[in-house]
Length: 86
Image (cartoon, rainbow, N blue to C red; front, side, top):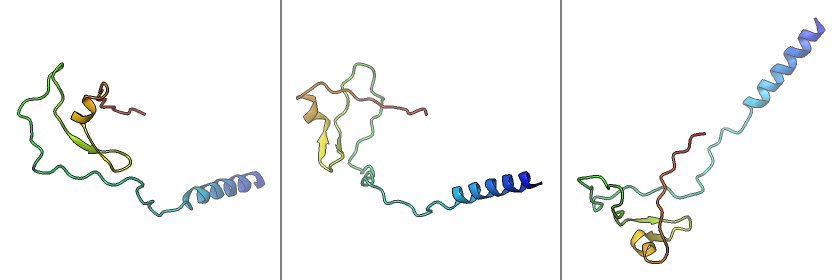
């Protein structure tokens, strides 16, 4: 009987310890991605293998704007669309 009570108390304390975590949401450390504006043209046909990628501008981790056409002339550019399966 004593073994059952100790096991019950241990399981209960473990459950309470897991449930007592902070429920506050952390502020995002990176700025939100801006919505696509109407100025962004929608391609009628998809890009085929071997075609040049259309030019676009994005913000890097420091907030600076980076354009594909500016990077294309300096170094080789590889676009990777990683689908994380974990």
